Image (cartoon, rainbow, N blue to C red; front, side):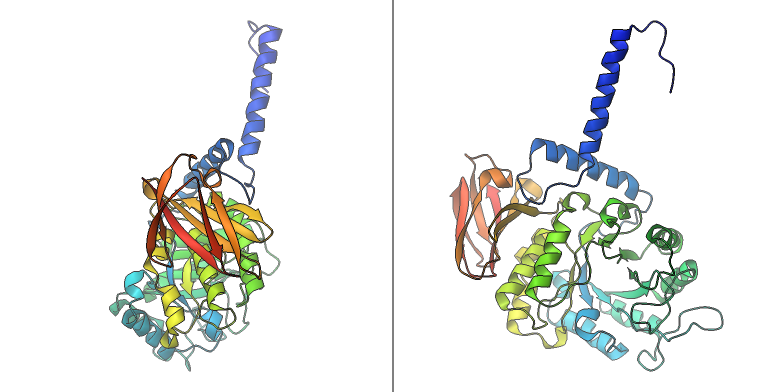
Length: 423
């Protein structure tokens, strides 16, 4: 510790020590994770701003210009698992274009696990599975790019991937990123199985460094499952990070992933996003109301919108949910502020967040098994009590005026979603 100048008096030194201690306490408070429920208080907003500032500072080392809004696209795993092949990927790209989903922003066509041979070649490189991807990944990337879309691929920060059917990238990071770049890959999902007893930070740092050098045009999605609180450190490593274990196609799994992701809201922003896992909309395990809630909360929370169903054979209900351009616009809003849970009473919840141009996004979410009225108070969503707004119902596609609060009767497991524009 530096010695105090001799001209300081004891009383002055004591005052300065007290001020310094208070600053340390304030700094510690600002670093805390925000409460899951409650209004945006002045203290919390200051803390969130400090955290976002820190994240931006860390992210500059990784910044690749990608992910200015949450990623949108499709991933093979939730519906197909290891049952994938190059024709399926081509047909999916075709379907994204033909249904109009591509024009709405769903641009990534992401191959998950099981795309490679069980062993590397004699040079230590990945080899596409000769039975299921006989034309190779480069040819597939060319096909997807010709559709105006982007191709994603999967690897693992371990010795084998989670399926055990192909190698991981541990200790092959630079070689694999060079391979992916040569193939024209646009996106890497990087999983966390078979870690050889080595730390998360070591393994993900190695791949991040390889991406910074050889994969600058590749969106980097860390799939660490939220085990080591990646929201607090992954902003300097990649463009998104999983905050939860894998999602399953049921109400309990979906709601728990939403809650687990919610606590990290202040760490998300343009270039780096919290990821509560891919969408299950259309896979059949939930009702239309539950899928509507799933999609609405993911959109509000600025989660990646990665379709997980078979887009070649969607029902009209599924298409109606996934193609709601007004809900998508909330997810893709340029402000990039993750919405969060701000009111909760016995399963009747209000989730809300700020949007660009001083607007607010609000979801009234009924997690109970009965119809109920939910009321969002202006004080909970950051509006003065006297503020009059135009409320846009994003699922009914209608508008009305409101002041002071917003109430609606919401069916069980369903939601209402609004954008509020001050008059």
